[in-house]
Structure formats: C-alpha cells, structure tokens
Image (cartoon, rainbow, N blue to C red):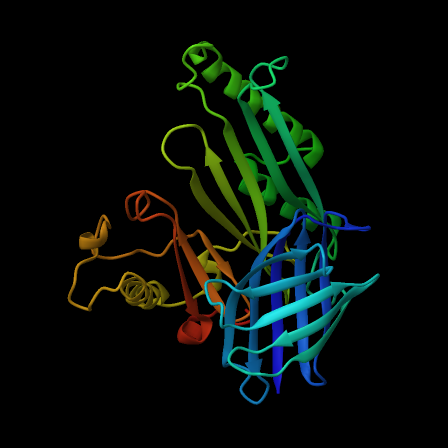
Length: 364
C-alpha cells in the first residue's frame, strides 16, 4: 500500500476538438483502491514536467520523489508522463475529464497497470492559484517578412484563495520578486507582464537595429526569453514555487537559470533555511551535498571538485532551495559554484537525512 503525491508543470495543451485552458489545478484521488494521490498541475502549452513522490503507508517516513516529463497526445487525447531521464521508470496515462483526470499508472519495472482517478479538491493547507500566460513576439522590422524577431513567453501564478487577503498579497509580492526582481505594489500581473515585455522588446530593438544590414545579417539574431512555472509543494501550509528562465540573446548557447521560493501559506512570509532548521544543520547538509555532487560527476571521495570545473572543493548551502513532500532541493545556477560549461546544478537530498534538525511544527 502506498500514499502518493504528484506535482506537474505543463506548457499548454490543445487536442482536436478539445482545448484545455491555461490554468492551475490541485487534484486528489486514488491509484487502485489504496494509493492516495495529490496532483498539482499548471497548464499552458503541450509539454509537461514535474515531480511525484510516494511512500509505503506502513513506512510513512520512507518517501521517494521522482521527476517526470511528458506531453499531451493530440491523437489519443491523453497525457503520457514518464520519469525524467529514465525510460524504464513509472508511467502515467491520464485523460482530461470535466472535473478531473482519469487513467492508469504503471509502476517502474512491473508489468501491471493500476487505475487512477483524480478530482479537483483544495484541502486545508493548500492555496488556489490562477495563472497568467502570455506568448508574444516582436519583429525588428515590422514590414519585412524575413525580419529577425524576439519572442517572450511566460507562465506566472497568482494566489487567489486559501488564506486571508493580506497573506495572499504577501505571497503575490514574493512571486513578483521571484519573476521580475521587483515587488508587486498595487498593480496586477497583467500590467507587470505588459511592462516587462515592452522593456524586453525595446531592448531588443535598441541593441540590434544598428547592427543589421541587408548585406550582412550575421550580427543580428533572434532573441528568446521563456519563464516557466514549477509548483514543487502546496500542502500543509508550505508552498514551494520555482521559475525556470531560458534566455538566448544571440551569443553562444541559451542559458537556463532556476530560482525557487519557499513560503508559509499561513503568514505569506518567505522561509529561510534558518527558519526551517536548528543546530548545525549547515554542516550536515553541506556534507550531504558534497557527497551528491561527487556521485553526480563521477568523482571518487579523494578526487577534487576543481578537476570538474568547480571553483572550490566544498559546496556551501544556498537559499535558492525548494521543498517537496519528502526532500529538499538546492539549485546552483551557472557561475555560482562552477563555470557555465557545467550548467545549472540541482542537488536533492531526502528530508529524512536531516529530520533531526527540522524545527518543531514543520511538516511536509
């Protein structure tokens, strides 16, 4: 018997004769007759990515989280979701119903399929969100068919229910800071998005107009900026959100930056690590992170991180972290602890390994 939590982030879904509107949903239900399921899903395109976690009910502290990715099948009209980077992992196939999702779940390395049925349900300790989704483009020369262009895509959440108005306002200000590096002060996300995309497109024109010539177009590139949403946790009055920023401005390869935000759904205040943990938690976490980094980069215990492009031999904890129902993830973006060639580094460690440092009252 298992209890299961699933968290998904989706980029828009359209099927023949059926369109699923951009939105956020919180589902609960069952896999088989005994597996409790919670599903958080953000919809805004045709791709899917996220996290699900499960544990044996007889061992509730022994949980496991797994990243998943997938897409909407236009012909078969269902979601097919698989473990990220593991084609032999577990698989979900889910059909959209009027008030939920229904389908099957196939566990990894097992030749069985269990029925899965989910309905929208916002329980105590979870928040309701609406999403603002925009996909815009702007040409350098509006009258030229072959003109270079800049594209801007964004999916951003706004908390609308599940807490007092002042708490929701505080959460939305933190979301604005996460996405735009500025607090939302009396203006809606529609207006902020409009201002940001206008600034972005104007910057594109300013930096490329003088470089473009009809005979030599090599100095002018198309730009891309994508901000996608991850909902990592929305239970037990703890909210973890993330934004993945992809940017390409013409030189080298595009860069991906991930930023995370973990908050109290009761107060709307952002959690720091010191507000979640007591004692010498940093020393314990840094040892665990170092071990995970060495495993990820195939380094022996006596080999040096600097041999793999890191700036130092140790990795300090970062406030760029998220929580799931059973783990804590730390994200180090390019140039923070290693060169750009290493890319963004995400280290996930089980909460059970640092549970003794959790402050009283913190429940995932």
